[in-house]
Image 1 (cartoon, each protein chain N blue to C red):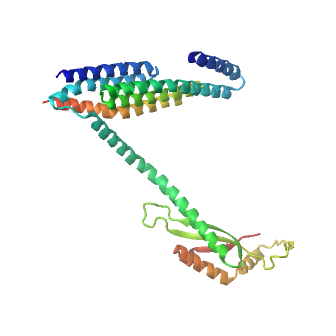
Image 2 (tube, one colour):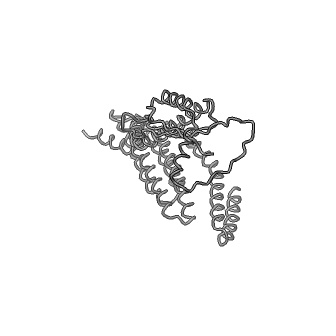
Image 3 (cartoon, rainbow over the protein chains, first blue to last red):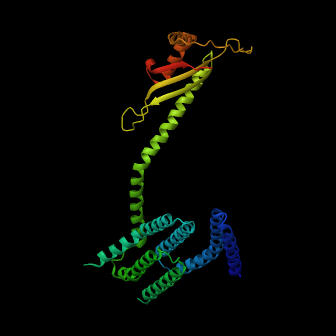
Length: 128
Length: 208
């Protein structure tokens, strides 16, 4: 049961971070950052397996892979942007965190622009 | 017709399941709204496009997406190139300058009688001008070889001069130490290498 490992790691890291926060706040930040990365890496393997399975299903039912690929890219960007923003927010840098979120949003929208334009093209082609 | 319906339903169901899973997976932050918007668009396209393809006026989403993203990439590169150009030119100019300085040092040190040399140049850094990169001025600081290299030279105690009027004589004496032959040879070589006027080459001796 990997959830126990993750929870154990998270609890230990939280206690260490709490103890260190009063004396060495910069070390507490580093501990929380490293813990976040470790948890992310543990779940990454599982997510990859699930995504691979879904991809194989999508291929079997002959679905247009453009939708799936774009969706997955968007989810990845959202995850990374949120992770970065949370780390910045933990360090007390709310302004930088909101900029990271903004960058994530902009990149997602840039990726989605071709989808939106193709939808517009679709609507135009429907019109007589 | 049945085949088409089967494919269409399968497509829509798979897409919906996929979107549902993704909505569960995405972090509950500020990006969630945008992800929902995009997934909604994709679902609409997935619903309508097969029907339109049946009628004969559907679009190839892959091609459209590629064309759209290429256009965005092209614009991005064009906008970046305006910023990058200046940076790159500055970097190129620095590399060019360092290369010339190294060349100057090596040709100066090859001349007999010169122990060590330092060089500096002024180049035209205005990239809008036609003469961009042209060497404007060359400065060479030379230290001459001692005539009796093998014997350790005893440092002489310098005479303290108080009178300002005599300092010019001392400078002139230093100037005279550089052999005219060496100066001429050096000027000639540098002028040929960099295509500069001899008046723009400033050679001075380095103090020990």
